[in-house]
Length: 78
Image 1 (cartoon, rainbow, N blue to C red):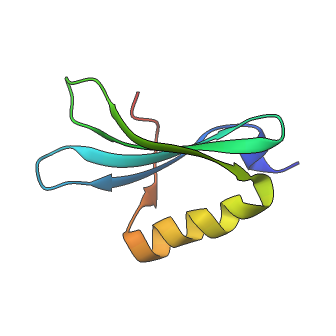
Image 2: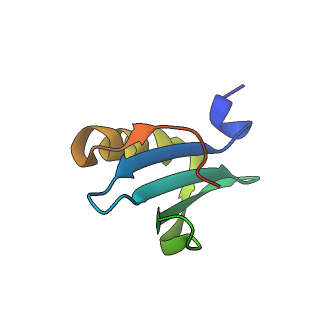
C-alpha cells in the first residue's frame, strides 16, 4: 500500500523572516488534497491555495516542489 494513502506528507521551505512556507498532501478517498500555505508562530497558519489531485499526479507534483522550488520533507508544523 502507498504510504501517501496512510498519512499526510509535509513539505517545508524556510523564509527569511523566520516563517515557513508549507505544502501538505492530505489523502482522501479517491483524490489528494494539496494545501499550500505560510506559518509564522504564534500567528495562525495562512492558507494560500488549496487544490485536489488524482493520486497518480502526486509524485510529479511533489518532485516539482522538492527539486525546482526547494521544499524538503519535514515534520508537521501544527
